[in-house]
Structure formats: C-alpha cells, structure tokens
Image (cartoon, rainbow, N blue to C red; front, side, top):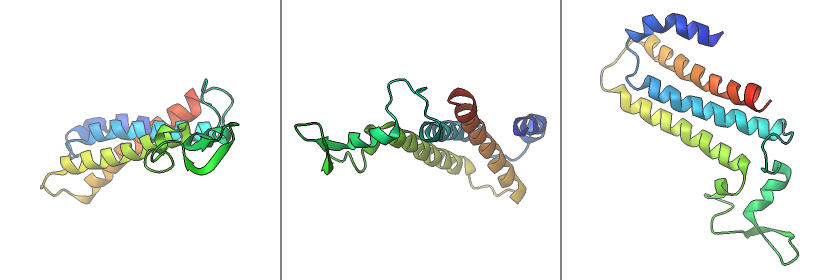
Length: 149
C-alpha cells in the first residue's frame, strides 16, 4: 500500500523541496531494512534457509577462543576485539546488525549533506521522512516476508 502512495505522489514530490540526496539516502535505508529483516528472519524463523550459516544458538561461540578439546572459553577472545568492535566478523547476527547500523548512519549522513542551507517548510521534512521510512520498510519486507520466510 505504501508503495502505491509513493508512486501516486511521485509527480508532486519530484517538483517539491525534497532533500537533494533523498533517493540515495532511501536506497541506503532500503539496505538497512533488508539487513534488519534478514537478521530477524535469522533469529526467529531459522529453518536452514541460510545455507551453511549456523543458528544463533551456536554461532555466538565464534567470538570466543576454544581449548584443546574444542570447548568454548567464554571471556577469552578468539582474536583481538572479537567480542567488541570486530564482533561483526564472528557471526551472522552481529554482521547483519553491523550492516543495519552503518546503513542508518550512512543515510543520515547523506541526508544531512543534501540538506544545504536553504530552509523549507516542515511538511517537506515529513515527506523526506516518509520516503526513507517507506524504503526501509520495503527492504525489511523483502527479506523477512519474501526471501527468508
């Protein structure tokens, strides 16, 4: 339904005072939504559809070292920063969260750069938000409800 509204409003919005980077920021928001939907499908609808990626109940052990018998030593990092800033390299859950957060930050930065110094009416900011929210929702829906259902 949201996509229909956006498509109907597109001719109006194309002439509007939208942020000059709104479509680029929306594409990045779509990636954020897709990564978030993938993460949620992985956590709550894991049925082996992720190939060789282990379920989260097992994958969390990847950030910790193992002893000679293969037993996880919680608290001893597998490699430097594997339980902190480089945790996204250890398992799928943290990787998808990393992509979601960096995409959100990137789209906010791109939006801010596209803002310029010209002030516009409040409802154009609302239109910008609606476009980016819709893009994120479409990305989430695509991964959670279609690809990884």
